[in-house]
Image (cartoon, rainbow over all chains, first blue to last red; front, side, top):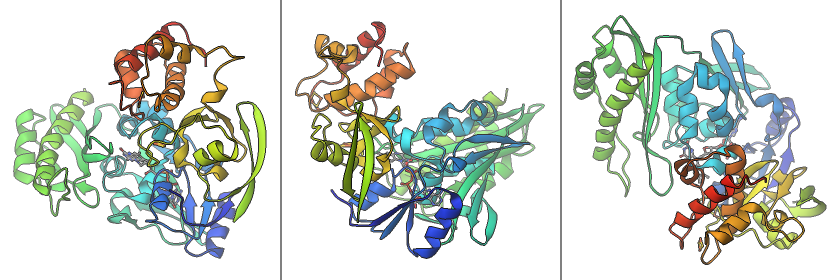
Amino acid sequence: MYPAEFRYHRASSVEEALDLLDRNPGAKFLAGGHSLIPMMKLRLAQPEVLIDIGRLDELAGVSANGDSLSIGSLTTHSEIASSPELRKHCPILAEAASKIADPQVRNKGTIGGNLAHADPASDLPAVLVALGATIQLRSRDGARAVPASDFFVELLTTSLAENEIMTAVEVPKLGAGTGSTYLKVEHPASGYAVCGAAAVVTVEGGTWTSASLAFNGVTATPLAALEVVEALIGSDATDQAIDRAVESRLSVPDPMSDLYASGEYRAALAAAYGKRALKSARDRAG
Amino acid sequence: MRVTISVEVNGTKHEREVETRTLLVHFLREDLGLTGTHVGCETSLCGACTIHMDGLAVKSCTQLAVQADGAKITTIEGLADNGNLHPMQQAFWDEHGLQCGYCTPGMIMAATKLVEDNPQATEREIREGLKGNLCRCTGYHNIVKAVAAAAKAGAPS
Ligand SMILES: Cc1cc2nc3c(=O)[nH]c(=O)nc-3n(C[C@H](O)[C@H](O)[C@H](O)COP(=O)(O)OP(=O)(O)OC[C@H]3O[C@@H](n4cnc5c(N)ncnc54)[C@H](O)[C@@H]3O)c2cc1C
Ligand code: FES
Ligand code: FES
């Protein structure tokens, strides 16, 4: 299984990577290679030019930035899962990263590649939507920030422009009183999410003051359950309130369907795991 | 397109010209003749091709040889010390952690990192840590026993 032939450049800075991209229209960035190389082996992708950004230290690592944390696009799933800052201030992201595939894949796969690839069965997209994260992009013309909820356009398609690179992902530091949980039903063979439920909630005095719930694996792009959350805010943080809100308000438009799980089954999983994720996040909010 | 890469494998530096599309596993097996690293699925799932690259367990069928330029690599051939089996290899032998042996190099490379990262790994943690390595023969039970035994023996890597 050899990929088709391609030309290869290793970039030594983000500037150089953007210049190379500019000079080679249709070139692809290579980060960890754990989505792109499998696609190239199957010849589902045949880029003529690869720009290897895998050694750009300026894009790697987690740093605190006031009330938020900035995660370089080249930070691997293993680094995210074990980052002390993320485990403390944004544990849901570390939890989701630790549920991706296996240790070898986590050692190479990066958050930037995961998001840019936009596989609907990936584990990180819905978590970033639930967190209200921001995606930082850069081109030779400047930088822009896109809310995670606007980043995923359709199956395997994002709002990343032809001439842009993703530099970082900003996530909020979750404060006291906020709990978060990521639950995953994984495909038994591939390990990808058949349904992944991400909940981030804040409870004060026994009522919900803020909540978000989003799903991976169920629809072509991450599904934000806005109506469910609307029904929760202001009500008592009880199991009954969760069950009622999910049962009456969760709508799953156009669920994906495959040999393993029908759309109907995926929608049922979303309801069951949405409830569980909300309850667990509430319990963790303490 | 061909490029020259320089890689340190099991302590020996190699400089070779490779085609850009050469997978790392094929570079190791065909260019360097290190056939201990196996190819099971070639689709990133089975782990038979696991090696250590700059200190991390990696599936070498899902890396390009050019990505390894400048890297330090250890393969199964690099574990034994002067003919003495590495404690993890010895534990697989003692606990019958293999039958046909096809998955074994990858299992051992994954297991040595697992124990190095978590010397007190529980049975559950061992099973989870070997999630990326498939075995068609053993039913995993003796593999898990072998890894636990090596951990107990304080296997250095
Ligand atoms: C066996 C296996 C199982 C897996 N299981 C799961 C799973 O359970 N859950 C899950 O979430 N994922 C899973 N994955 C996918 C894994 O998380 C990938 O590593 C990840 O999706 C891609 O990251 P990468 O760094 O390897 O990207 P690459 O493969 O290098 O790149 C992927 C795409 O993103 C683009 N890109 C990369 N970085 C940037 C950047 N900084 N700016 C702009 N574009 C960029 C590339 O051009 C390419 O189009 C699995 C992968 C494998 C091989
Ligand atoms: S051959 Fe690499 S994972 Fe199977
Ligand atoms: S011993 Fe035969 S595949 Fe594992």
